[in-house]
Length: 211
Image: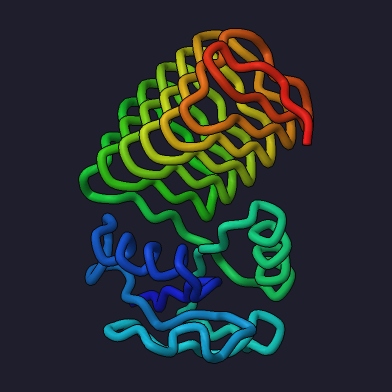
């Protein structure tokens, strides 16, 4: 049986531990071995979690190990995933048993799909992308690598979401749009036009904002 190692033992890591226990294959194909985190005290004050094994940098991969990234930052998630890949580590997907995956869906590796999400026909989801609870992805949507869709996000059919995109909770992305690499869509936004690379949009209808 495979031993799942969760990269990150902070708040999101604890959530991913619970997702793992509800995921397809838990107890049959894999169990949770523990966490990797450079803060050995990250779980102090919390109970009922497996131990922190070491930092990513110091961890020696075992033959039965598989991995999942549980870091809130898209940048650092990609950074530490690459460290494990460079050591020869293998990533798996975690799909909640209460998620719906329809025909011809293509998933990369290291993908998280949380409770209640619906991934419709012929959708493609890239490596290390996180789909949080109760998202809906319409038919023929493409979400590229290292992106994150927050709870209750809706993405309309044929829309393309590029690498390293963050779409916050309850945002709505209409059909046939392009969300550029590194873009951020604010919480509750309604996106009715394409979003440029590395830009942040917010509101209804969503408009570019500057910080």
